[in-house]
Length: 257
Image (cartoon, rainbow, N blue to C red; front, side, top):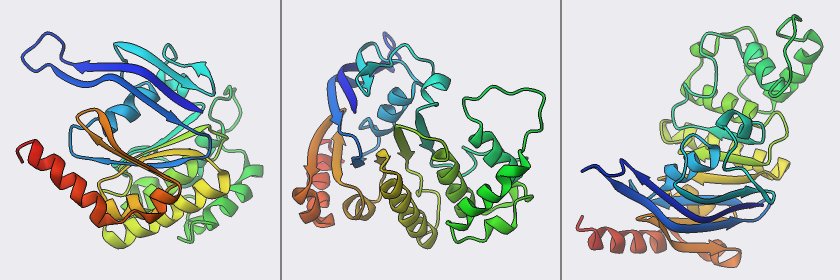
């Protein structure tokens, strides 16, 4: 479903700050897989998502989605098939627009805009029904500006609207990191529910080892641009947080931390 073949990525080439992130990196993800990705800072986790989404280019290598090369596609073109939720709850929604207006924008993603009204009143009940699945009471706040919502409410809304239209891939970039523990747990449960119900192929970068172990069907650990742990199926089911900590500590010692 998603393939990255022989990927090379270096930042600040030919400068004293040159940093090689990926060198002949390869990854294949099957349709419907929910992949948790962990690793230390600078290991390449977020860079991977940026490469897939098209926000940064690669020096060489091939990125395929459903067997078709997307290397030359602009980020906004890839966004028609790829949803993304960022760590910052302020991203992914329009701060000064209402919940209904944000949902209307998402509902019309990829469509041509004419001179008609931005919100189709016939769709409002549909938006309310979607919001009610969040169990946050947002269906009763359709006219509320998104900027007035809490971080957890905004992240839940972002997760919802990123999957409103059919997408092939969902990228979650530490989407619970900026939230308090209770809200983080709620967002993870919502994430798991949406991913399973819609059967969306998902890559989730997280620093929360418990979430990485408890959620998803596959787990990857990155170190210096390489995959050092790849657990799938029963191996993933049997994995424990202490197992990950053991490997993580070994890597840290090797790095001199």
